[in-house]
Image (tube, rainbow, N blue to C red):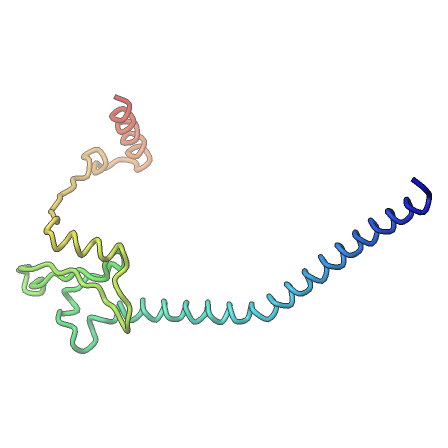
Length: 161
């Protein structure tokens, strides 16, 4: 190879490197300009969605006090997730004769998958009553740290059997 060919190859490679570098810088500049213009839109959208969610949560809790709500506010217990309210109909008269699950929706909102699943479970009457008793060792009057330590030792023994 002669000297002129080697110089041509070097100039070509340097030109290629410079073109790559400039293209990369130009692309980065263009991308940064795009995001400079778009970030305010994304922030505005996020703020609007956040306000809608907060407004929905607020109105969910106010629902028992709004017109056309079929149950007494004093008989409604707010949960929020996975259902908005459990209504204990008759609780004010100290005779609960019905338990109602209430999901509050506004506008065109629809049940999500968890809510649909809960509704299906309730419709199929797969609901039961369970009474849980606190272990006796935890209700004795002793130092709370001692109670917790004793209880955890007992639980570990049960798990390792």
